[in-house]
Each structure stands twice: as C-alpha cells, then as structure tokens.
Length: 87
Image 1 (cartoon, rainbow, N blue to C red):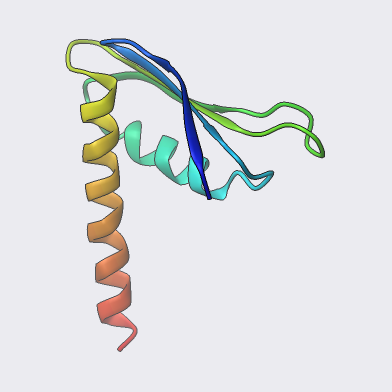
Image 2: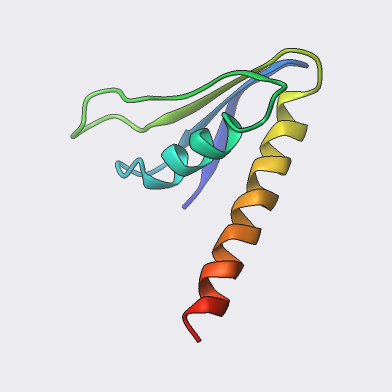
C-alpha cells in the first residue's frame, strides 16, 4: 500500500492511501485520538467505489508528523502484545 502526503504543515497533515479499504486509516485515526495533543483525526471517504481514503491529522502544539509516529508506535506495541498472546 502506498501513501501520498497531500498536505504537510506544522500542525496539520493529510495522507492519501492508494486503496479503497479504510481499515489502516481508521486504525491510525483511532490511535491518534488517544493522543492529548491531537485536536482532530479522521478519515475522509470519497465515493466508496472510486475514491481513495485520506487521513486528516490536526494537532494543538506539536507536529502532526510526530503525532503520527507516536500513533504508529502505539499500534505496534498493541499488535505485538496480541501476537505474543496468540503464541
């Protein structure tokens, strides 16, 4: 899956995913919303059959990119825990 950054500012970022599936963007948005510095995180869904979903991130103080990195790290920890439990 490829991701294209369509907007990158200090406190805002928009990432477009080259898939019709919104599972990954939804997971990221959910993890981002647990961050106290994230003012908004959501997935824009154009037409279900033709558009690509975009993840929109807006932060209060720190950078949107930093918030995304923290969310990915958090998801990695959660998934590792699930993986270890399944062994």
